[in-house]
Length: 256
Image 1 (cartoon, rainbow, N blue to C red):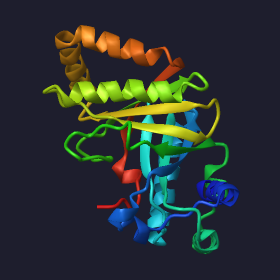
Image 2: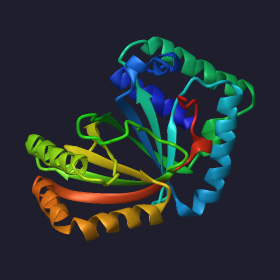
Image 3: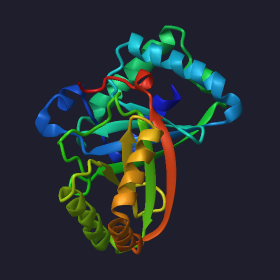
Image 4: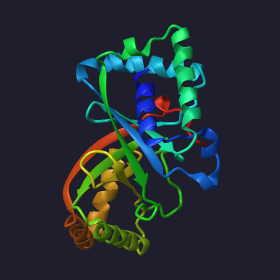
């Protein structure tokens, strides 16, 4: 399968390995993630949905020991987000992956043939920032209740990370001293193109709910929001925004 082969390559390069047993240990919550962005031509989208669904059924049939969250974006692409627990046990991971691929072939499933010319892939490794993310009630991570997602890719000015961190902490101070419930995650790209780059991720029940909340915040705290934004924006070269939706049916082995 094309995704499995890409996993082999990236893990060989960076020696990343994760296991479900490690995910079950509270002391080892993953903070680093391997992200594949898979781009699909709009003309191929219906075929891709069918082929990808069949591929996932094959993986489940053979008890694939992979964990990933899947998102569909507004730009005909998909994110496959996989936790990296540590940099050990590469041989074990490679052995399991090769065994899965072989079992699928013996079962008559040729992923190379199925996915041929359907999509392209690029990979990134990101690091979750506990310090700069904000979850006032302590609940974090992806849930089915909040499938709508927005990502802001903030390409930072080189050397401005400390000042940008201080600016984000001012946002946290503001929300800590208000009665507004607003939460987010910040990820830092550690291996990818056009770095330094921070990714701001927010989640909601749907886009309408998110826009309503942000409109209320702006209406009641317009001047505060303006100052906070100006304090952060001076450390950013450019921002690219993207919308998307969590796909639990295409995700696998998620921790409960």
